[in-house]
Image 1 (tube, rainbow, N blue to C red):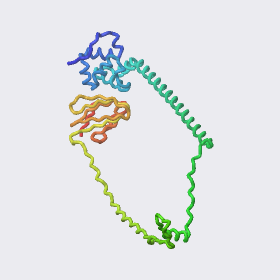
Image 2: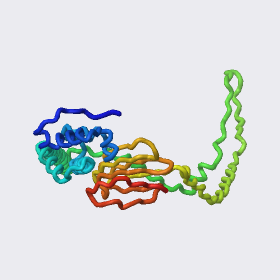
Image 3: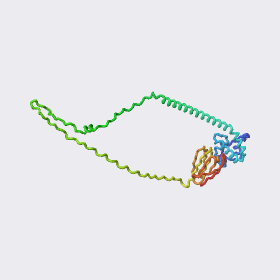
Image 4: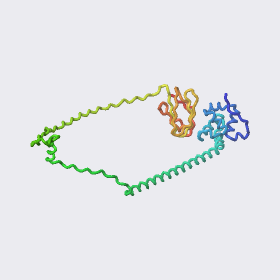
Length: 306
């Protein structure tokens, strides 16, 4: 069996939270693995409590729940353990709060600076638009298209002149002999009269086909999973630490931020531990479950079955 680290017992070690937990556990000859089985807290979190490594632990509200559970499993006074925790972790959480405030101030300053630059850009664009509309003489007018002369109606005599056949042509001989007498008469030939044939009327367009009604396409039915699969959905409304055990598998631990959602699958049941009972919305196969407790309350051994 794997056991936790052992340290020499010191008299002043009982004044700190980590020393109190470690020495009490070693006197009772218990391992970290056994404490984790009792409290359902991950072994590395228990070790971080004994070493007072608060940076490796979740948020402060969840660490308080860890401290109470650890003290209860060892038979210690829970309120005394909470006081030792607040004393031991005050410097760490105060420094963390100062760093968060510094980061927030830096982000706000960057946001204001970016806003100022956006205002300057918008101001320049507005000034440019005003100047563009106030100086119309600098804009070259576009050339207007040439005006076409209006068509005058044709008179009846002009129409008749266009429809008359061309005048007859006079054929002359190519060569005229000086000895031959020039005929007094010349033969005049005229081309046959031309007739104007009217154009056939344009064929009528075929009738447009009647529109056919469009039948709606069938909507595919939604397929659901197998009846034997249990789907668990956990959506966080507040910062919440959860431990989920599906069937007989090893438990999985997660720290959910507000708005974050996680999904698990199992065949028979789930066993849950909630670090903030009112900070999550739980659904089993789409059906809401709970409520399981108040805000900030740690609830264990929540068994969910179909």
